[in-house]
Length: 553
Image 1 (cartoon, rainbow, N blue to C red):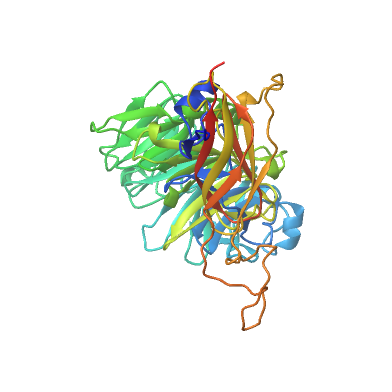
Image 2 (tube, one colour):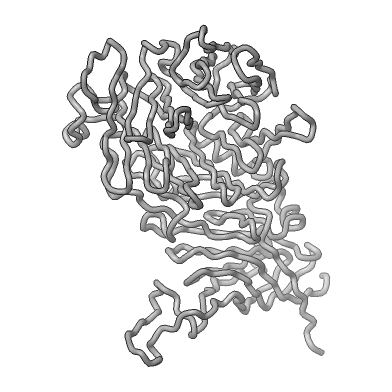
């Protein structure tokens, strides 16, 4: 009698999950992952290996310590800041003795970094000529920024928690610092936002706002003012027609149009934001880091109402380890993918092991439509992104002085991308009945060479269960002699006009179905797929297991 085989399809979806017990996970969330490293849940289905990053410029930003400010102006222009040291003074002609430990601002277009020019207007700086764009005080911290255009020139405000705000003008690549002549209240401003054509600066538990259509007029007679929130303000962001104000223990919103009708009302007084660098609007929601995880601030169908979901509930275990690793984070939004990335920064840590989280939104609002994954190898102290035309540019930096562009290329600045997918242990049918496995078919979408390691694990990979033998690694590679993959070591190219056995032929289709004969038996099975290479991105779509269910014993 012929053996009666059965099939079990595994659709790769759901992302990383770590809040379920092992058997519940494998029963209720088939296709999700217990490990999803350097894969991203794809909006079109499956899990795609992430793209890498490369240097924006082969030249380091002068100075020492981490990059303190980073703003992508366009695909070809980035603004940065870094602490001045003796070597920077020697290398940069605009810097002078006495600038040590101050913050200098530079712009770059992919080659060298140019120190911008500044002219102080305060009488305490009686300068008749432009000088280097260097802060007045020392020990400036990480800078946050906001964009505006009140006079036809695109500009950016930077605040660093120590110095007066700095205003960058894209016209001429110049930088101007506010001074005591503007207002001493904004010295050391920590957050900034532009709302209703007004600049809002937070300093401690106070918000100072300017006269309309200005960023430097703090005269009450012209419409400027201040608001005391009673708690340290950790972040500001504009959400629809309101300014959201995050404090350590609360979230409030400011509505109105001018000082005459600005009003502050509470959203919640029970939970706040502990790190303003994690605040991003993604897919109609605001994501931010709260004391109990990564949360969502979502507008609901009721006018003026908000939902406050814990977006990281499904990865509670992984999120707890990640968030406890440091107090320094950065984040960036990939708009074309509806994706939020948050990175943990530990200066002493090698960049090859630096950790991050990826959240991809699959529905308009709410935490139930978010799929998670992790990153390894992206070490970011500051990060920023921008659409320029139809091109999205993402950049990040750490303490090595280089600026990197993210989501580009097939490697991590020359290093392999270690991508791992591991499924939960799936009982398939009855967790008490043994199954014998014969074949696995992987449906994938490669974009070039693909070389994967497949491992199967039975019965929770128990080391004490000597009755279950764990199979050896199976290699899955791109095949098809009619298709030559550019960059593959096996591809041979010839200038011969006639087709020969060594000539390359382009225009064919890459294999998308990969069959593997497998062996072994067990009551539960898990799949682990690894790619540790500089091969191009690919997408894991579906896997199909073929097996025979044995008799109950």
